[in-house]
Length: 161
Image (cartoon, rainbow, N blue to C red; front, side, top):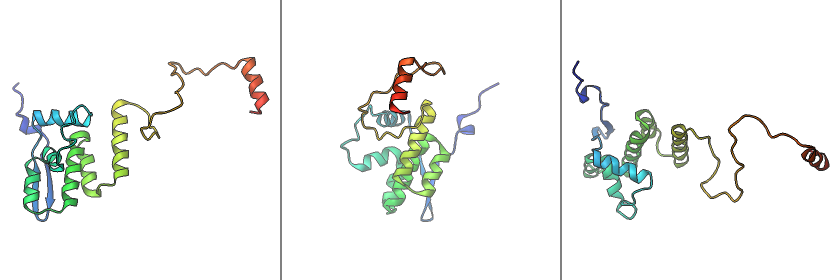
């Protein structure tokens, strides 16, 4: 049986209705997609000192130029940009939430952290990203607890715990 054409099952492009017009974000090409992945992973700093427009153009493609030409408000362009980035990283459902509810930096950071944890399978952390001064206890592969010795029982009794 022959394979279906990609266009038959591919997701529709992200489209933002603003001011009575629909701005279509073209799908990222291979080179731009890899570049964006490398930037997100911190492996590429090519946009670090570049003008902000360069990042928006990478994410929104020709839709960015159309929005600027039509004098779309900054808030709408920012929402579209963050929604397009979210679509790229976490899918359409999350992108729609960003588009409709705005850009709350704390909520966005929490969503990104939750998504990363879901992908990596790690547990939530209250860390702010600073290095911990206290080393973490060694992990254990079993579910057994540490055996209490007479020495540790005596210390516990002495401290009143």
